[in-house]
Image 1 (tube, one colour):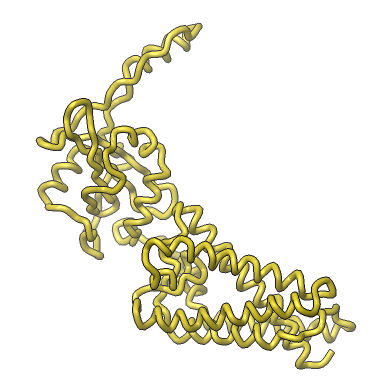
Image 2: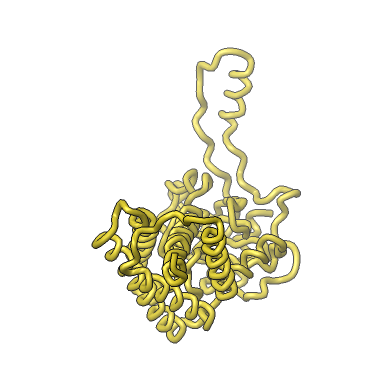
Length: 340
């Protein structure tokens, strides 16, 4: 096998791995956040109403091209199908490079979003160089004959060596590698943890506390948001019987499955209100049924906030400052007091 042909051949597994890896990491992020339009790099250049369809289109295109490169690599799909897939891959990376240049100029604080949560580092020369090299790698595979197995051990070793060398170059050009290593070896204190408000809101809306009290809410968006050390508080207007009330959710700041508490306060006075008792259930036979009926009839205890082992705010203040929706300090203190 000619050395140039071997170099072109190793681009197929490299490109498919990059495309499928990017799609999978975006999917994992979307499943955790419940949204695909948050923090996906170039989608920040679009209006808010277009970010979700653009994010879906990018992920679907990555998935289709990654699978297409594998399917057309052999003798099954040579000719026009293989050429279309490889040309489409090259165009995708060329467009991505142009979008990253625009993103760097318009939003220098936003990461490329190429690999989901790992791509928070602002776009720099390494990210741009990687995208450009991948575009060239895709374009040189056009008109590549069907990939065949190496005819000797020496040829197989040379192919693996080329692939390892390219992977090392891509790793050096990937800021995500350092982020992954940091996450494996370091766990930052919750007081210093940076969790976007959008992620907190997405986690809240997937929680049992939200489903349990959503019927009392009169608005889908919080009227006030603020942070106290390890906790973020979100205030939603609510209707409690014939009075105006507010439901305050306390969300512990961690990436996955955060602890969530809820309390209801009077909108006028700020005093904590008890949750309404649930109706009793009858005809449960046996001694355990009687005990369960008594506990159910008593109704759920009012939510008074974190227990002693889940104690709320402790430690230094938030270095990032107050949230953009933070309300007056007096109102914040009054509402968060319902948890203590």
